[in-house]
Image (cartoon, rainbow, N blue to C red; front, side, top):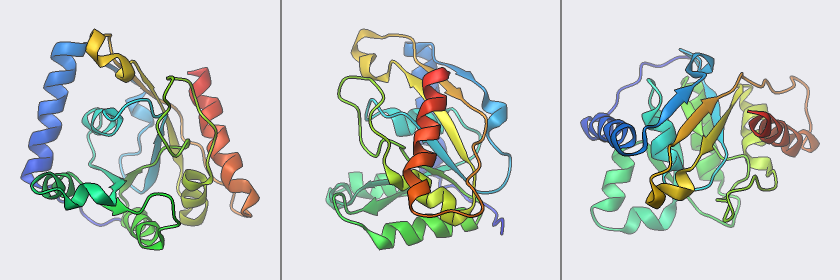
Length: 196
């Protein structure tokens, strides 16, 4: 069920500021934006090489993007409130946080776009890491497509390298699936990113 999206003023302002910053200082270019669905839920699934990947991915899109953030960040005065206004929601890292999982399903059911990293964590060397089950599990159970996203050079922002973001074609989960398919689906996303 598609529910009309409302974005906070802070979210809209922040997205515009990031767009200007990335364009002005990093000459960032976007390819494949036609692959982002105009309506309906989907998991936006980029590689992860920098803390700037979530705002970069969101700034490059017309639709609002929702994402998980470490629960501890929400306890920081002002900063916690700020990231909540920019569509972040808390997750307990290192454990299976069912509250965050349920919230993810709720967002997708309402037709939202959810950011999830197929690697589950940030790559320290800039190379693609090992596929984790999370993104595949959510996409399978919510029956929404995954959009592979290749992000380049956000790990070299101090060198002012040109930032590129490429959106690939949707990857649809199988209708009949088991837990064994979760990592396989996340791996498909990573394989597609490696070809982009």
